[in-house]
Amino acid sequence: MSIMTAEKAGAKIVEWYSCVIAKSHDQAILLKEEVKQLLSEMKDNDKILAYYSLVEFRHDMLINRYNKNELQDYFQNIEHIAKIDNMLKYLYYFVSGCQ
Image 1 (cartoon, rainbow, N blue to C red):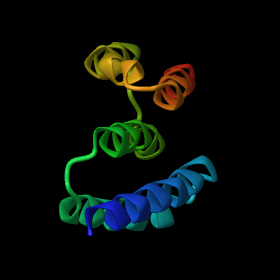
Image 2: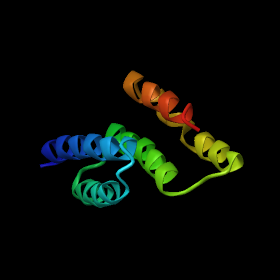
Image 3: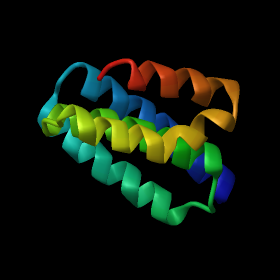
């Protein structure tokens, strides 16, 4: 169950991210809840959880406005994500460059 759930969660995160990029507020909010439900059913998977954190940050940027200090604090908290693998490193730098 956990492998399929991780794959489903990953696919749903991609869908959620697409809505965030398209600035579809309502759909992004709905998909975030779906992803959270899938994550609660899934065995811990560091890559999926890191990916979730990065997309959640972009989601929060869409929904809320942050000042520069808040953004710097956030990136200091998630900098370790970039050390997990190359894809997450790419996503980390991509998201952090969008501030």
